[in-house]
Image (tube, rainbow, N blue to C red; front, side, top):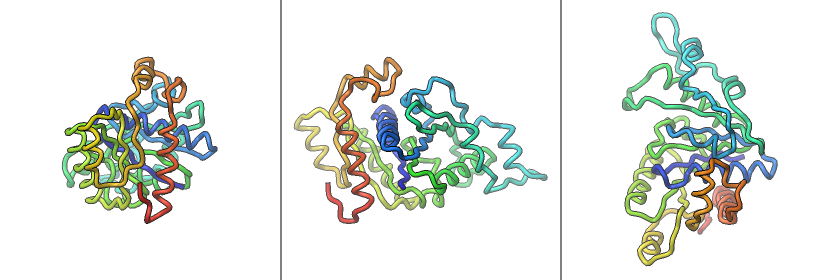
Length: 256
């Protein structure tokens, strides 16, 4: 049905958004896969999974077996169709969760077994038949290559009212353009209404799917290491964002 990548600088709340969207889609009985592509590895705890999920980048023996051939030649498209089933966990609400792990950032020419393995897993995840796929990305979205990005329906950049966060927004948009992601939208998080924050919001030149007010409840849920949807936090805005992103994907003339 929909493949969503969520990006933003550290601390803006993209993992909370990823977890909330996964939860809301799962509540409506969609089959949901959520992949943590952020080096902080916080998505599993945001979805209530206490067992440590082994990062796929650390499967050294599997990577060696699947990617490396005789003579040190690498397979660009190693077999990975069984990896997500074997190395993922399910949350209580039925979301399949996997942790991608760290990818080496050696420039466009960087090609090593682990990178080939991780990118193959992402390609497989994006083009498989799961109804909803949610990728919790880093701000740099280095995991997504040009071919893989073609399968992403929407990149959501999460920002908070602040100059540094908005500078990251421009960078994410440029990277998404570079790799061919066609649909791009913004979610504003931790919003406190001031004249300055209103002016920043008005300066956004991209579709805005929603504005989430600052709420101490989400901070406390994070400190207690419990999923935000299991606390008493107000989640109405997240539900609106979910509906808005569907409308945005279905309607070329959508206007926020």
